Length: 118
Image 1: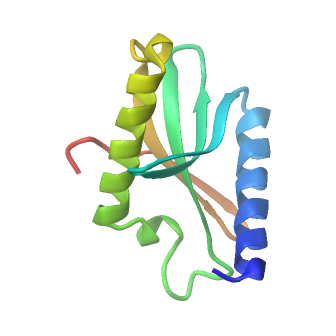
Image 2: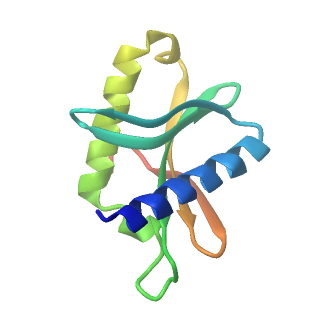
């Protein structure tokens, strides 16, 4: 990835976090990574731990950001979430879900974008 792409991605993740913070979510981790992969944002509300993939699209001519989360990417996120849960046993008893936030001129937040069975 070139430097411009990295900056755009970081900006989209920061915007997504500000959006979630405005909704009352607590940030647990940004850019959590392990050998299995990376998760852009891990947040929680009172009862639920949420693993968030952030996608940026300058326009939707080639689909939304959410549509770019392939089955391989979903599997990597699920494996990475499993590692996070094993490494953080205090969060292991919480419900959890996988969301996608697609950043473009608007914010499209897809809650429960995929499940363990996808």
